[in-house]
Length: 375
Image 1 (cartoon, one colour):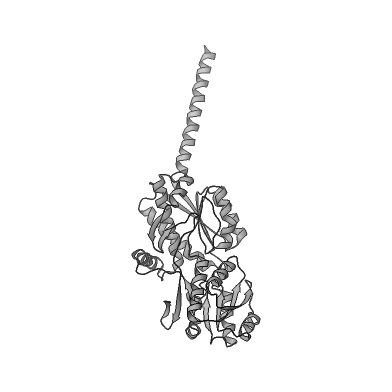
Image 2: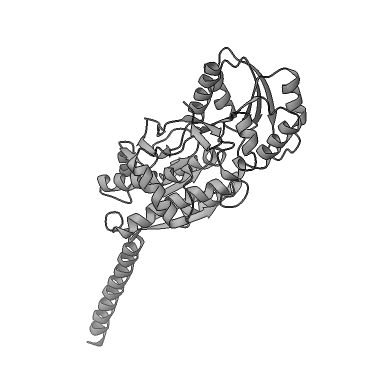
């Protein structure tokens, strides 16, 4: 009798353990699915931090708004942000950490060099990957790119050179991953322009050899293709020293678009009738003005256009999840994301068959009243 009772108790115990384990597993699963984990990797320190901060701010505004409105499919967004300083190795490490440890299904990034290294990792893991980068980063089912296109900027500058009647152009361009895309697009339109091409590397401080060659070969105009920062600052200082500030100035990488670049050189930019590529917001677009107001209210400063792209992308992702009726099946969400066609803070957003967005590119000219759209 005792043995029979022991067997009964043992059986009850086993059943109880199984039930407890099942409840724990089920509870953990529910807990894991209570939030939507989204990762972001931006350069928040280092020479590109001014850009990274804007991407971060735009994404955070969208996430805060969505969460305050009840989230997506009744789930709150949990945003996990990593700093890669614009460094490829750090970006790869952060990508693996977010995917393997934090278990994100969605990843926001920026910059061509880091995105080209990390997008294949996301594709292999079926992570939806949205990058704010000016050059194309390859194709895949899960990889998307939303920003203005560097080739489009080359085209509009090339057309401007023709319209201005420039015959000889001195080019001082950084050695960077998308420089050739830009220059090839430029040359495709500026077919009657002779180009004197010189290059430099990140970290260079002396550009007088290149600028002197451009001067001696009789360039009518100068094109600086450099990111805002130390190199662009030195280049501008040295072209003034070499008395090249009587030439027309073009810039191809929003070189002078940020206040820390155009304010110190305001007089020079006016004198050289500087033309820079840009991607700022259309203030005739209600979505743009609303976002600019939100940004000003939250950060007490004027909006820089970069922030609008991740803001739009987060809302596009929200719509895709809702239409797919899932926050975890990235295959279904990716298919819906490719169907997106919406009006956002940065204008119309839709993706081509390779996941590349189509955004408008235009030029601006520096005047005594600041930057104005160049017609």
